[in-house]
Length: 358
Image (cartoon, rainbow, N blue to C red):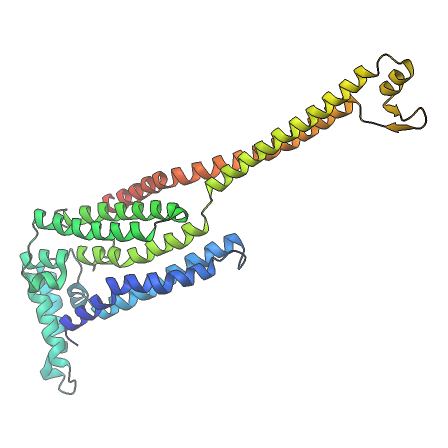
């Protein structure tokens, strides 16, 4: 298989095919894992994250394998290797892979030509820079970095993905997912601009020494569909309906008002009865004692104003506890959802600055 075929095969596995793979296969499978009652809440989240991470790693690994090794890996050099180091590596490999020394290998000529092509590209500093930023496609099309063209292509790519992300996160349950997805999209945009507009090598010498800027950007683009659909699944699972909580709060307040009105009405009736019986000494003593005479005969117990007031206090305390719990839950969920995106952007910026500026 030639480099062009391998590149085309790798590209076929990514892009829209990968997008539909995550949307129509991975997302339903993740939703099945996160279905309420299937596992414990924490275990469901851990299983879903593990499933998504494993699947993304396997898929990305297969795409990288289909793309084949880059020129640096072929020659066994790194991004910072000097022309002298590249020449030495090429001479060593050319002696090993020359068709005259491998007459029984049907692919000896192809392997030798591939190493020769890698050598020609890396020895030319202009081609080397183009290859680092645009890959073999940039060499084939004689592409050069132009800021206007770059930002136009960047705008088309991110606007397209932004529209897709917005459409896929419509609905009340996707509020967190939309926030996380657009935060990740913004972080990816900042990283890509920083990588592509930097002069020279934007990475530290220890960070993936044989990989290029083009491969780093390709990796971000390849992993974003997995990230977006993971946000959709986990965000829907963690969704808290604030409107429903507000309705519950209002219902609790309504029930509290009903309790207050009912108890106050009973107290008022009791006080009225006491006032009405206050003139007849025997009846007055029975009312004060908490009993009432029925037809001059047996006495039936009745609630006193003091007991009604105590009952009112107990009901008010229970209602206030319910309302307080609902309000606390409402505040906690609201603050958590509003601050997540801000904290995520800060952590992403700190990690990016530490990684690439050290």
